[in-house]
Amino acid sequence: MMASANAVTIYLDGLSLLGPGMHDWASAAACLLGQAPYQPAPVTLAAPAILPATERRRVGAAVKLSMAVGLAAVEAAGSHAANLPNVFSSTGGDCDNCHNLLEVLASGERLISPTRFHNSVHNAPAGYWGIATGCTEASTSLAAYDATFAAGLLETVTQAHSAGKSCLLVAFDTAYPEPLFSFRPIPYSMGVGMVLSPQRSAASVAELRIGISQEPATVMADAQLEELRQRIPCARSLPLLQRLAGGQPGRVVLDYLDGCRLAIEVAA
Image (cartoon, rainbow, N blue to C red; front, side, top):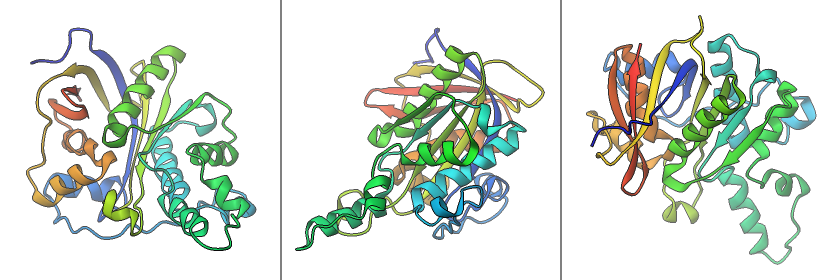
């Protein structure tokens, strides 16, 4: 079945990717296009220098990852972070912090660090983003299990058209340590950033027409990349990212809900 006739158009102004074996968009694009061998490796995350020193000491992997891809996407778009409504989409948020809190609760002490409790809420990365960038625009934080990337993309497109201005999507996942890893086996951290605009501009690098479809999702030909696509929720974006890396028009279908997927027509 083809995409819905009610498909909506959005313009991509900025794009970033940080994941296993892909330390920026340029290196990721080379792997996605088969121009460089893909070699998965743990993601190295640095504390964001844009945060004040006090907050910088408190942040974990979720904030470091989301801040890195968000800032890179804003820079690629030539935009200003303070002016962008934003959507932070993550299936589990700060998984390390969740693990540490549960360890404490399972111990005899049960004394929770105020910093760990503060970082446990799902919108903590969005809060740190506001502190770092001075952004006071509308912000949404969401989770939708394996549908988290598609849900975040739809929310960002809706926000952009509703506000009539560019919006930022930050989709990211981190990994649980054991024993939670056995129940939710996300192997690596990964994040994707997109600046999306309801109007075409000089910054626009692609036009995306997004509709609902019942077609099967597009899969990756490379076995390692397909494994990532299946195991990391935000990596459901990989077929779209591969199409964007090639700079050629075409169509991809992304996983969303059971029996309901996103069909995206890409025009350069």
